[in-house]
Image (cartoon, rainbow, N blue to C red; front, side):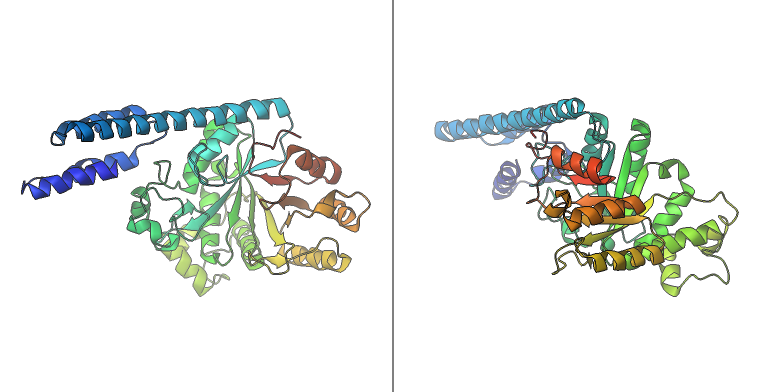
Length: 411
């Protein structure tokens, strides 16, 4: 489509014709359309292009006709594949029954960023999972330049953008304003959603629809705006099951903010609010007076606060290294969790967790008896319903991430 538009504009310029280019008229609309489902709209604009192009010779006409039919066929296949994926997912979840502990990692999405499933961290990815019967969805959040909490896994949106040349797609999330986000289409044709957008969808779908929210390491500035937003929208708060991070300092700060807010000390004169906190609140449009107005409100019953750990000593995620097979490591982790005032841990999967007599399996069951425990996996790990059920039933793990590969329900 873009090539045809540019070809027409090039011919127009060669003819020294003045006027608005076709790219200016149509590109914005085309980029904001859902290409997988908006086949009719694309066909209409293809016909408009064909009508406005100068007459072609027979050979060119045949070539363009073949290209048009191929494009139309590919769009039909995409729409069909998307329908088949959704139908497979809904039927499989319904047949599986017990999926209460399974968390749809970044929603129901394609881990290779294809279009047969929704794009990760979009409204569709969560809505598909929730309406299919999966109650928990994991998401990643970031803070925009003007203090909006948006769903984003990477530093920027370059991996997911529909338009590679779009300047906003290569800017860091914390350098984008909300208005720039509104103009940034992802591969699905939709913009990145705000956290409140997703929570409102969960609210409309039902009580079972809940989020597991991850805060990336180093993203400390999001803590206070998140607590403030949740304190003001407690109707949405019940749709958040967990807030977690690899960053222990962030989790400690989050726990402290909740406690201070509940006793009316956060944001008031003489409080423990730091310079950093004051600056972050100001960025998000929050002042001391507005925070002080919460002092006598009903205590906030926050989601579970969990620390994410990793079993790789190289710590590629910059998290706390933790080998559950070590008793000393377990004792140190318990001390860190208790002193931070959080509720539990989100562990990296280790195969020994399912070996009943192994120290790793024993330590896992012990941790689950005292804390809220979740499990996350790499793409190379056995992401199957049988593994998830064993972790849930044998060890009492409460949250288990899954990308729902096609082989997930086979075992």
